[in-house]
Image (cartoon, rainbow, N blue to C red; front, side, top):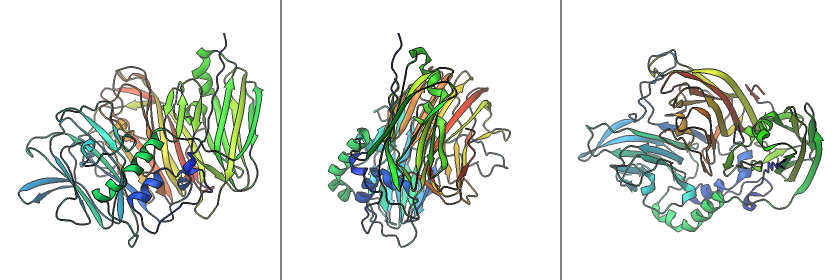
Length: 528
């Protein structure tokens, strides 16, 4: 029996974000406006007019100083921090200390022992405005709903349990922010892993500093944002265009969109007419291309474009969805000035029926408007090393982009030939004129918002692990992350490298997909 496969690649926006592309701004940046921005997909289509930068501070091993010096691949990532401060009669590890105006956009952390006290000092205050009685953002002194405060698959509620979380409630500040942690016993080493992503705006930007009182008044809005992130709604309205035909191996089907300045707000693809056992191979052998104003900006296997990777398993996020049976949605907004087309090419060796449906709506183009891009890169037989202090190790290039844009997400789909965990390597993201990575991480799974080498699939609004074949991590695995307030603007270049470090020697095949917005003349080292 043949089974009908429907792939609905629907770039559908929530009703709240289905607008003309103009960001609705107040005169000041506040917790309220940042919560609104989390639901405004059109905002992502523009280079930020406010000129903020996005960076990350983490617990990476401080022996890593430069690529040409010993320690570049050092991996005691649970011991790094900025400095040790004496405050009264106590010692506080300084995890983060940055001058503003700015905002914390993501806090990822995990440990084997949650005891201790976190403190957050805003605008140079002598006393902390926020106290967290554990190394655990779930104990933030406010009821933060699930969509803004995610627990990892290994999270244990006991104070001495292993586990961590990813915290997305924005914490804006007018002048500065310092985050510290007081250990129960400073002489006993307990690994404390963390990432803190943050924006910094130019001096003079009007930012209202976070207070627990203000946040408490916004509890209803936080619940609404959480509910919307967890249950994205479809955009209504717009013009529907569609085409459907039988496509032989080596042929393609294309849909031309209405001319003029518009944006794709719903993109649907339907494929049927093949055996279920051929599903994974066909999904990988169908290529999607998106052309905007006569330039190809999207080019990737359909399985990877969906955020799923090899096998096209289930994905359920704010921007990307796939039910693992062929129904897929992509909610990134895709603007263009004059013309656009979507093409699906069939290289599966079989004849399949393919339909493309697109809904377009109005869009206000300005000097900061950017095109949506999806770029794919792959390499087989990449060596995995388990000598963390060797300078002979490899920083593998995930993606390099030249030009102006905003990086909004990525997928790592891979086959691991090693007997166990492959992902000890840290991500290193170089933006524009960085002389040291402005994002230096602590491990592959940490970057993708989980911890402790997860070996089961999981899904969140901001990504997850669509595939994990074996508890050892041998075989096929995939990780996906989409960025919200932690999207990374770049004016000249963006380079994302990842260390190839593992528990045991081996090799891996990597297939990486990057989602980003950029000017028409941007270039990328994609091999699709």
